[in-house]
Image (tube, rainbow, N blue to C red):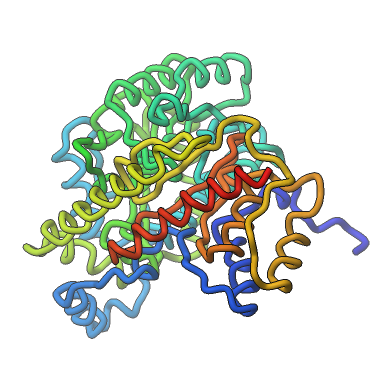
Length: 436
């Protein structure tokens, strides 16, 4: 074209969690039986939505108002319900006007990073959930600025590393926290959150905190809500949604809660720009907003959520017990969300390792995919694991990190099948490493 139409940050938009599906579907057509352990969709892994929840949605769908627009910020009744719940936790107090609904947190993330000044950076964790790191990098047209989550210390943030990045990079305007974390499954202690808040206050920064897994914790851990530690000075955006907790990922329903939004005129103007962008779209989807208070207030909701959390706790320990003794692999027990990340020892992987693949067609396809000097070593392993065993996981290097490993979900409902999957991964690792 006569004029370059490609955004400067277009090359930073990647999402290997779904990219690998293309490879899996390609191999599936060649006869590989694929077990999808790459994406956090409980429904796709067989989660059964209880009849009482379906009845609430069906009843709401019969109401004419759920077919119309809602206010730009979101349904007034729902925002009041959420504000009351947040305020009951103590700490930062909000009003319904401090809440804005989006078509899923992906929509919120796109606008939160997209409406930042291009030279303003938000430091994100490494490894980091791809939607956050890609959106931040795309808005700036550069690689993400990252701080370390330490696999040798339960995947907790390295506070010194955060402070050093802030000190020596004046472009940093905000800090992203994901708690409970995706992709690691870590749940941060209160002290870690308070330390980050203190850094933000000292350096005049704002905080973005993704709390979509806030109520999915186990193994004796509890996720501390940002609102309880933020204080009354640091501006912050808390991100929440219903896709994982209810779970209803297909609803595309998420929201942000703005804390201390009027404390800084520049931050207030920034939030207004996000609201105005939502106004241009008119509003977010009405139906899921309408049913949100009805579902969460239902007498069976807490029991249903507890049952799911109990299963994730059990499966997190099964997975940990299988992988913890695999030589060359560093694994932490998952305590929140429903993911586990495992890391290969530094320098262990090389481009000569393989796994046996029966089909010549499948083998040649994988060899073509991994051929070349720029393929990440863990991506090579993931492709061979997929082709050889059918187990589809995500390379850890796709989560904005130099660490080599993989992320896998804990969502398989059948315990025997779940155990089989992780034993397959363990034996696949051992065979792969032995092939060097």
